Image 1 (cartoon, rainbow, N blue to C red):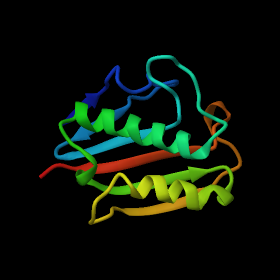
Image 2: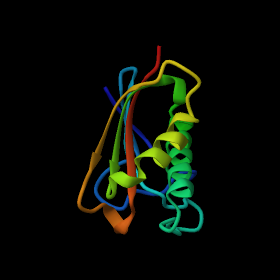
Image 3: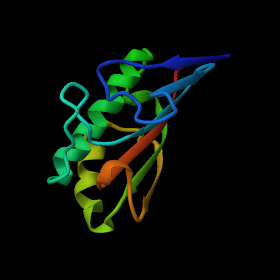
Length: 126
């Protein structure tokens, strides 16, 4: 059974998708960009601030699904510049205490709205 997860505490989808879908105990969170959910402003001038906002958006969606960062089993990070990897990695890692999820980080030529980072996750509730 498929359940749609949406919250006003994260940016509304900018296309034909939902913020997340829960299928059984698994939550598939769509890629989040550094878009402020309340002002609609993008954070594009500071990769550290942008990554924090992306992670906060992911956290809000997980909260709506009654989950948190400890439930994440897989992450995908998309960057337009691999030179940002160290800063993104530091921010990303600060949202986990241990038992980090599986992950890949890939460089892409462009991301929606011209942002430099997008992250999607898969979480599993026990």
